[in-house]
Length: 590
Image 1 (cartoon, rainbow, N blue to C red):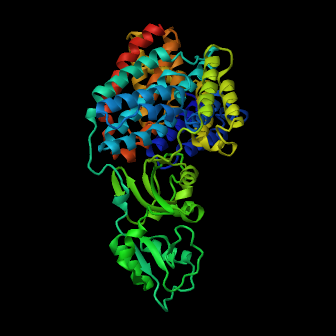
Image 2 (image 1 turned 90 degrees about the vertical axis):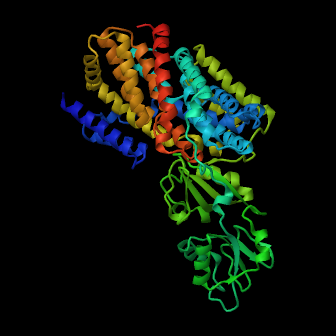
Image 3 (image 1 turned 180 degrees about the vertical axis):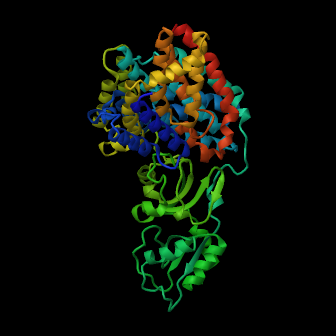
């Protein structure tokens, strides 16, 4: 083993270890590893940033913008609102939502497909009086499965196509993945719809409602000669935070001033509108020597009253809140928004909320000015769990968005235009027709994924150039020496799938795909079956909430724990392997 190989294997080992640990975000880990590779001389300086201009990186970014355009135009809600009905049985609902999610995720990023359908699924569960956890995991798995069927459905397929072009001279086309990925997806969806959802454990406290957090909404008044007279309302925020009390607004002369009175000088007789637990409220009242208000007015001070509304949102990994506190983000002073509660894996957090570090999958209960609720959710990069009214807007734009996207996919499928160029044209057209506002163009791109791809691609190339992938491939071939090639193919698929369950599927693909090519060359067989096996396996992350972003997104809303996923995920992965190997051997012979 050469010095370069030792350094690269060490770097990848550190990267995988840090990704498993989860203490640092994956894009920071990957970029730091790239810089270390350059400094240590295993990645040439002139090639350090080649990954950021790589076709795979560009396609992932463009697909996210196109997905946003399909959502904003109302094209997807046109489908879901027509087909989804809360009166259906749970099994029928899961079957229908799984089919919709699978089809959508084949033509738009699967994370975007789940982000769109999750609020619909939760609202349907509430109307039907059942726990969202019964249907959210099947929906997540369905959107992951559907992405296997096309080139643009999931990042691993895009990366596989790019690696094939670099290694073999031609990429996979738009629907080359459909025979194998489609069969795996259909088999998986049938299992999820008929059997899988019955294996999900349920919990009584798996959902969060406004009533769960709003323990006590009351009014405290400022008496005559109080020390707070003359101070601005914002000067009380520090004391309120220490007492774990949320100041919702101010009432003066009977007029409510929700979210608009932080700079108003306090006067005797002013009423503070507060949300707190009884003991916290008493502590706040005692600290500031405030007086209890007339209880008859409490009914007028509900958080959902005129001027404000309470919304529930789930925090994805890309949110500006992730890893930060509401106080650090400036939620109150920047957006006039108050954090009322957090639900994490089905357990409520009700103390020191504003200083609690937010994690991916958390559900937040926010009090926002009614007229800015949509802006606040977009600014935070969170997903609403209730309908915000951003549905079908203009029929002309709905069909325009669908037509532009469909035309691009068709042109790329028959080879008339290179896929990244086709998607780029769609993005330009969406901006020119105002389907995607220019001001929001870059907000829809998941930059951590772009940085991850841009950083890992040069490292993967360096590993291949140094002979590291050949070393791994020879080791796997030696372990399976004397066995039939289809068994070696199965081993590669199982190893890749296991890695994808605990690591980012993008990182897994970048390492596993070159290994698959080397294994095929060692066996003197076609590399295409091995690349297809890696593509399907890298997308099949069903055992943990960390293997795929979709599984992370449903963690909080579904009230799941870490160990809940494997109950349905393990048999699903076995089914995927069982149907994929024969399909690969039939459609892509060795």
